[in-house]
Amino acid sequence: MLRIHFADNRQSPVWLADERFTLGSDRSNKLVANDAGVAPFHAELLLENRFYYLTDLGTPGGTYVNDEKVGERYQIRSGDRLRLGALELQIVDPAKAGTKVASAPRWLLQVVKGENQGHKYHITGSMTFGRSVKCELCFSDAELSRRHAEFYLKGDVLEVKDLASANGLLVNREKVTTAVLQPGDQIQLGNTTLLVIGPKVSTPEVVDEDATVFVCATDLPTTVAPQPKPSRPRPATPNPLHAAAPVAAAPAREPGKSAWRLGMLLGALGLAIVAGLVAQQMI
Image: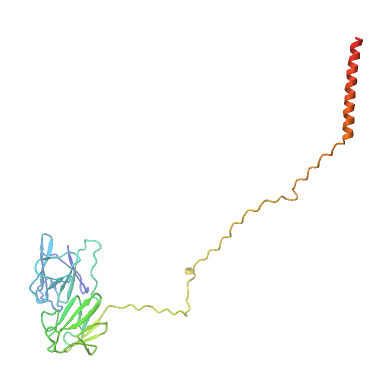
């Protein structure tokens, strides 16, 4: 089931629960709005085969869907933006995840002098200002032309243009034919004075480079001690206490003694042989 949200969140959303849903300034409508440019019976929504179709009821200012003027039997869907005069609505299907409701319009005009003093008008798309009932912003000021001026948005920038009016257009007491408006500007059209209310502008924080900066200890960066580089292994050196004693060289044999011993052995061998021969002869 679809639901209608007010772009400026002036009241709770309205469910589309009926087969025929009317919108206008007359109290007999399902959705009643007294915004500028809203006719007594402005538009209707008809349910057919589970789809809603929007029809403009022949109003001078027309009915718009996503900034496009529509006539009869325009099928609406979740996410569509409806505009009837200065009234802006959003169609939402709560069953669809991720559906975002349009935020409140960023630019407004507040009447600070003249008819409807204190009232604020949301600026959406292009809106004409004058005495004609065909204007989205219709005022009965006798000093106004039928189509006196036009307010229109170019992205996030609000501009105003004089539509060849008889008494002209003043912005901050200066006569202009067209101007880019800023928040706080005052616009005079006939005997009506409007105040421009715009989006909030965030001011960048100025940083004093010489100011003392206090930092929480937990926010200080932690320094990691440098790890020592591994040293190259040195060749092992023998312990002098455990060093092996040098092996003493064997004493050299004297050549004379060796020959004498050899002679004694040969002599003894010869005697043994002679003794053996003598013993064999005696037997």
